Image (cartoon, rainbow, N blue to C red):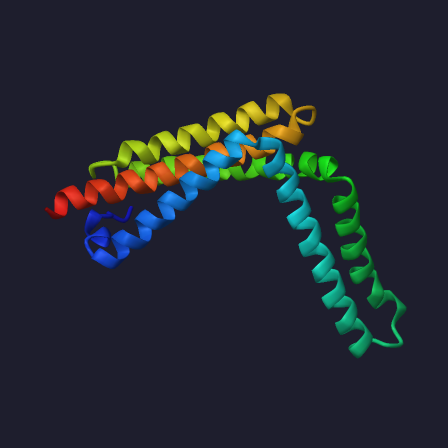
Length: 181
């Protein structure tokens, strides 16, 4: 396993950028915890708009390139249709996001716990471990409540995860600052 050190945070610019990232993650996470349904619906609508935009771009490319091929229109049709469905039924989109978030939280838990074990002797490694364990707990909680609680749980879980990602980053950079002094 590769050994990491807090030297990566010794550069003042890196510390400032990491601290700014941590504060932004904490703020977005806090808003997600306060307004979980709003965050869930916002995520669903954002994904819907991205799918519609991708569908329009693909339709443009299909029109310019595959004029005689009717089958080439399948992809833009599917992208735009799925985007419109998510746009008009954002709660169903939030439920679908729930499945993806369960997978994300499981992978995030594994990555966080493994990274914490790699950097274990360094100050602040416990926050990274806690973040990984929290991601595992979020995945298990989400599995237990899905799909009935997906409308508000997606926003709450994303908010909690982002907030703790920010706290873990903040603790790493603050511990690096202590070592640099």
